[in-house]
Amino acid sequence: MNKKWTLWAGLILILIVFILIWQFAPAIQRWLANVFIDIIVLALTFAAGWLLGRYGGKRNRNRDQENARNITEAQKR
Image (cartoon, rainbow, N blue to C red):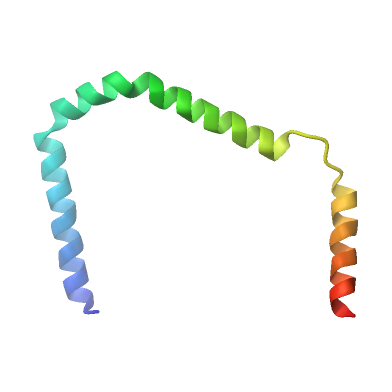
């Protein structure tokens, strides 16, 4: 693909997006005001699930490391 063509297409696309945002800014603001609480609730739910998955539960890292070592040794055989 020609890099100049890709660059110009990208610049034109960015320009179109900015023009649309400028044109429809009041409608976008009204929509965001209506769904703001929903977005916050979804973001908090995602964050809570991620934190539980990352730090929750009883996990023994030593056992995980031992299992990984055993798997590696078994693969070498």
